[in-house]
Amino acid sequence: MPERIENRMVVDAEWIPRYKPVCRCEECERDIYPGEEYFDFDGDIMCEDCERDYVRKNYRRCAE
Image (tube, rainbow, N blue to C red; front, side, top):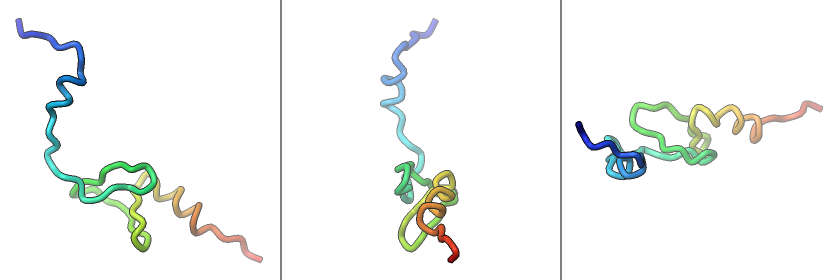
């Protein structure tokens, strides 16, 4: 029977990512890897999850 490791940190510490991140979301700081879509607002990089909040916060206007 193979040895069972209880602590996942030991196993995960040995994990090497397959690809290096291309960039990082400036809002949630999640790494963005090759093949993933993201938004670039004049240099502000946002992942798909943060894009809507960023647009509402920075581009919402009130008509007068």
